[in-house]
Structures are given as structure tokens and as C-alpha cells.
Image (cartoon, rainbow, N blue to C red; front, side):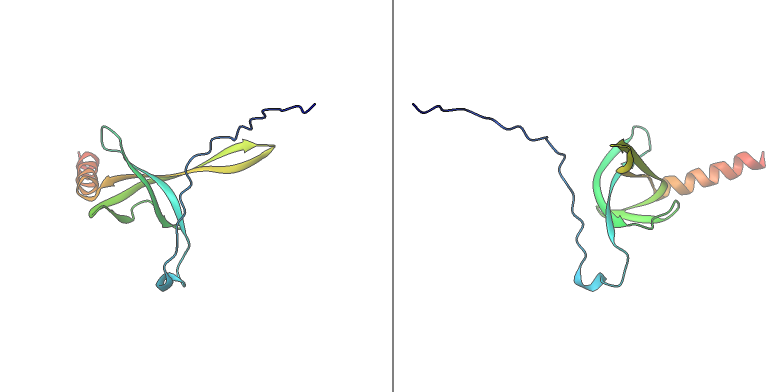
Length: 113
């Protein structure tokens, strides 16, 4: 007598993974990493996951979908797994370059008064 067993295996649903590929001409430059990009002007708007070099800093200018943005902050988040902290998310908070310049001007006026 044969016994039949239905065994179903469940896989952990994983988030889609973004792979940043280097172009042939960029061999000598820094590696690209995926960043979650958020425009922080009210209301916050997600611009998706984009690949940028790993050495981005506040105040740098980036182009996304033919628009210029200035980086306001770079955030690295880590999660504790099995007793070790592992990178979980890398996020860029950006503002449009025009808005960034207006904010700098308004801050200077506030300091003068």
C-alpha cells in the first residue's frame, strides 16, 4: 500500500531586490548602491529606489527623471539579526534645487534679523 503525502513548502516572501549594474565605461569609479529616495517637501513623496555611488553627501546635486535635486540627508538603517547588525535600508532625503536655494536664503535672512 502506497502512502501519498502532500507537503507544501512555504518560502519567505522577500522584497524585490534592486541590482545596480556598472557600465563598462565606469570601471574606475565607485560602485553603485540602491538608495530609497524621498522628496521631503510637504507632503513627502517617494521617488522610488535609485542607484547612486556610495560616497554621496549632504548638499550634493543629483538628477532624477530630468529634475535636479539636492541631498538634504543620507540615512543608513541597520537591523539586529542573530546577534549582528546588518544593513537594512539606505535612504536619501532630497529637495528640489530651487527649494534648497530659497531655504538657504530664508535662513540667512533669519540670522540677520
